Image 1 (cartoon, rainbow, N blue to C red):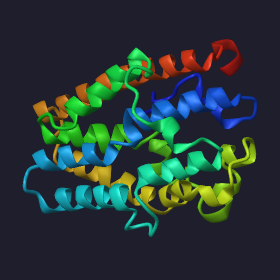
Image 2: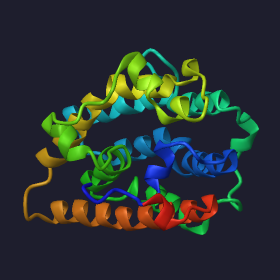
Image 3: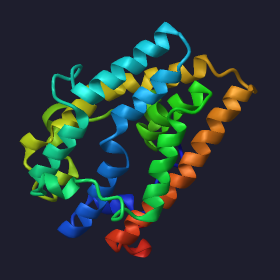
Length: 236
């Protein structure tokens, strides 16, 4: 997770991108994993051993992603589309179009779909709840030195609002993430670490799966940067 950072990311946190560049980024994000993330969690839940704490945590995560029930909002894919509407992008723009995706994006999406239901369950759970949902800030967030913004400040300081004119009321997804993700981060690590003994085949499968995901994700982000026509020297 310390290496889950791409050189193109800073371009998304400051002004200067054209609408076509923003759309290329967000359309990939939605079609590659945002739309289907609840279903991917369902796949992992389906192969999990009968461990009450693990199944409960996964079920709560799935419930929030598919319904927004814990945060009192709506399904997270729906919140994403509302955020896009706040930027002025129509829903039909995010209709499925496999041929449009960068080939590296399809490869990353295919990896997520295949590995979400592949044994051991600890590897599939780590892939989704730690790697996909987590960030390069993982270590600091777990240690308490990185705290997500909450409430109105999280919305008003978000780059889409601050630099690209997204309506604050369309940023429910940011509010939902700030409300529930802190708990999900701790739950994710507890689920995996408690059931992946050091130096075991399971632990090695977890690491290998996440290493493979990191490589595919970096290639995916390279592909999106290519579609966005970002220059590495300018974005670094």
